Amino acid sequence: MKDRRSFLIFLFVLGAVLIFLWINPLSPKANPGVQEVFAEKLQIPWEIAFLPDGDVLVTERTGVLKRIGENQENHNVPDVYHVGEGGLLGMALHPDFAENRYLYLYLTYQENGNILNRVDRYVYTLEEGFTGRTTIIDSIPGARIHNGGRIAFGPDGYLYITTGDAAVTALSQDRESLAGKILRVDEEGGVPENNPFASPVFSYGHRNPQGLAWDEQGRLWSTEHGPTGHDELNLIEKGKNYGWPEIIGDETRSEMETPVIHSGTGTWAPSGAAYYKGSIFFAGLRGNGLYQAVIDPQTAEVKELHKHLDGEYGRLRNAALGPDGKIYILTSNRDGRGNPRGNDDRIIIFVPEGN
Image 1 (cartoon, rainbow, N blue to C red):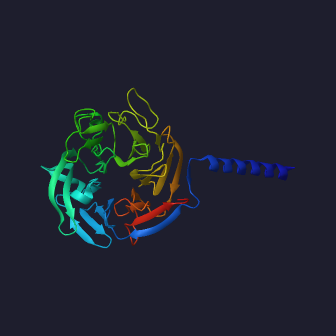
Image 2: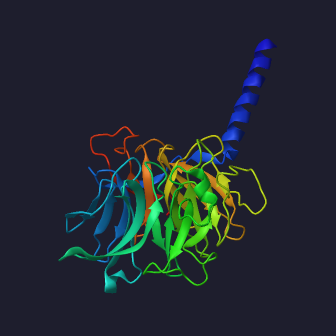
Image 3: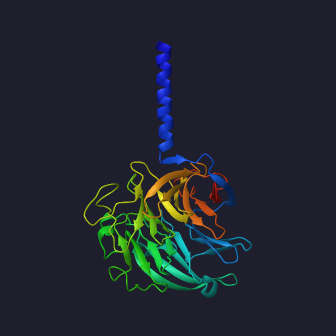
């Protein structure tokens, strides 16, 4: 009788565990998909852009713009101040790059002893490298931490820019400051007429947003680092206040937005993001993996959250969708917080299973 009771208890516990694993919304895929190494031995890569001829450009936080492919080139970007989390960060090609060759770079610099961030535009060609610098926006508050740094052109043709709170939390709620915001400007740095505050500020109350992605409905999503947990995936709307530092996680306050999903007391340390076949894929730094948030197209709710490549490549900085329909992932194991392996940092090509 005692043995039978023990066996029944064992079956009950086993069943409970199996049910938990089945419904657990954060579960690694058993077969995460196709993977291959695209590039190796990079120095803290941050952003990748895909050129019309098939080559790619990669920013390295140390201040180097690297071209990889049939043509191999390294360019030292002027004025980059590599300190802490700052340096050469985001990059974007103009939507008409094939015609105008405009390349946009987000970088940290020093001025009168202050750490700041700015976006510069260059003309980039294979023959002459990058020339003709034009500053699009500058004097974005910076610090050793929380510099934001992602830039991307939206479907509306405007340039979106994520900025961190520069370790001064009050700046995020100050609509006169460029810190702790998502900014929107035109290709020349001008303020669009329909911006909500007659300034570059598009949304505010952010801590350290580092990912931007638009879904098939044209909705803007952003990943954001929280304070030791409570990392966020946000649906960004014009003029909205995303709460930092007044609220975190599921906390609410009048006229402040809560995230669509957050990490709770755990951490993703999310960075670059890409929309791919109904999901937002975003890179996790402290999370050491690639996260997949499956989005309900009607409600914009997260139906499932999966984790791929759990610990397989260490810290992941970016997930970008290439023109070949594959996801390109940048590792960040040489940034002072990881455990680099011999061939780090790397670019990994990833194709989720079933695609």
